[in-house]
Length: 148
Image (cartoon, rainbow, N blue to C red; front, top):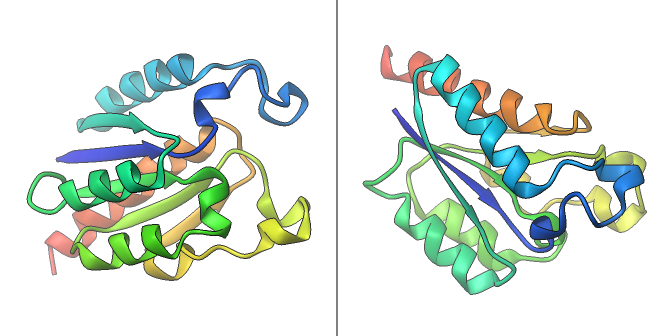
C-alpha cells in the first residue's frame, strides 16, 4: 500500500513559524517521524511539500494510478482553494485532511474547509499525531473497502 502525504503552503516553515502553535518540530523532523510510523503500519509513503497551488494540484493528479490513498495538510489553501478541492474530487483516491492545530479554535476564516467535503475525513488539533491518525485512518479505510 502506498500513501502520499502532501504539505501545502508555509508548511516548510514548520519549527520556525508560530512555534507557540506548531511547536519546534521542523518539516524534515515530521517527515522522519512519518516514515518511521509508516514502517509500523507496513505501508510505503511519499512526502511532498509546495507553496504553489498549481504544483499541489499536479501532485494530487499524480495520485491516480500511483497511490492508494493520501493525507493532505493544504495549510491556508484549505480555506481558499477550489482548485485543490476540484483536483481531489477528480481522482478516485481517498484523501484525509489533517491539521496540526484545531482549526475550529482559531480565527473564524479557518473554520471553513473547501477540501473537507471531498475527503473521507478530517483530523485536526493533535500536532504531529494528526498526520499519524490520518495515515492510520486512510489505511483502515482502504483495508475495509478492499474487503467489500
